[in-house]
Image (cartoon, rainbow, N blue to C red; front, side, top):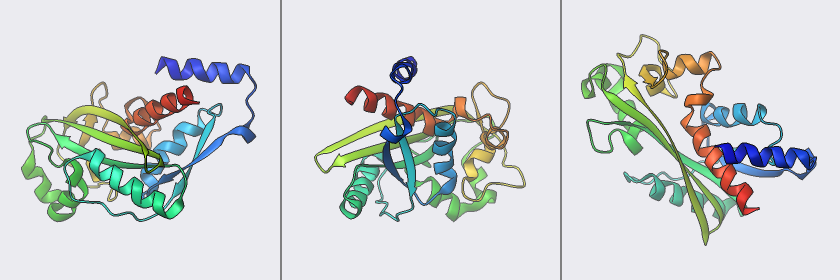
Length: 209
């Protein structure tokens, strides 16, 4: 992301004021997911864009393709809000399977629970989180940005994050802590797949402008 920070240095040199920032709705009902965005933005005050959470319920179609899911969400949200916006679809992918749990991560955990989800993997199995952001300017201008984080699975602990359960038993490559432990300690940004996708979007957005 070196290009992103070079651009930010350029904008800083031009004394870009906060009043000139562009506000983009980030459509999600999950405050934990939006927390990744606000944490990143708060540590980069020179960003020319800012994001607001838009807790709009959108339809999540049944598909194993994140782009298809986010496109549908984006069009639905745009038809309601009539403004450029971001939506996302995120999931964890166990590498021993094809697209599983993947886009069905929430529903599979909700159906199986912590006790039975462990039947799908062995501690040490490889997995990765992936998020696809979809930015829609209008129905004829839709763009996708992906972020991933690879790592290994461990046995789930007694206490899990009910809204983001998988991150309590996923250890990113390059860390000895689980994703949840990194989040609790404020050390998640280098591994934050959502932030990686957001940086890709911001870099594209700055080039576009």
